[in-house]
Image (tube, rainbow, N blue to C red; front, side):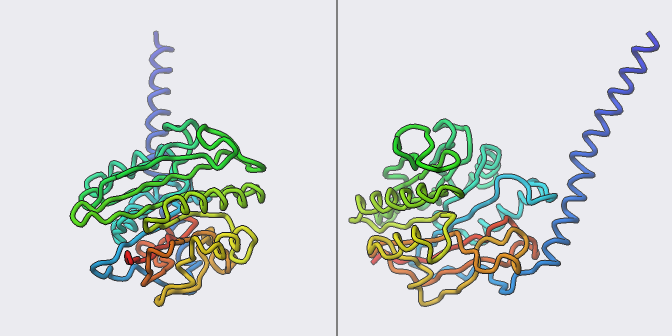
Length: 309
């Protein structure tokens, strides 16, 4: 009997220690590392969101990083990711690396303002990362939407060509409840290994944009493609979609992937906002400021302010 009591006490102590470790001690350590890492590796350009001009549509691409940043726990960035979105207040934004855990958190924290479309890439339901599109639900309603896989069999969960894993594209046609104006938002995350898969993915995106060329179309993505690489050129010179960075009068040239070390990743532009010719663009920015100086992800969010022509 005495032995059972000792075992129960030991188990209880271990449980309490585990709870303290995971909910108090590790987060404190993680937050400390987060602040130190961000302070020691600041971006060369500190850029924050500009005020949104009336009549423009703000669209953002945001790879929120599926897990932690090295020793920095994902939970240490929860509020900063949400804070970034609320500070920018895009009309719609596409996320990449949004795990089911992230999606539940974003829905809970943003649900008063935003709704979303999208499915997990694993099974077309709630398994695997989402490339979801969030939109201001009081301003827009979804006229049409769907998700397809970047593969030879786009209507079912699948790996395409030489890709390392399932990759998807989610799209939505959003209708302004007040004006009736509509635009199409396409969002994706291309494979990080398959060169052929990235080329074929560009072709699929261009085909989808061309199908809806009677609407303003915006494409957001972590394309895992550098400027000047062949798949990038395929899209940028397609005359179907144009890179907002290249044509916005208020623009900037700065890396979008930093991996917490901006100075070591100079030139790593992987995240893009493309538009068709029924959109005009006033502003393109890479938001490097973070929240309280802290990195919010291993990518910077990228946004463009657009005008329906």
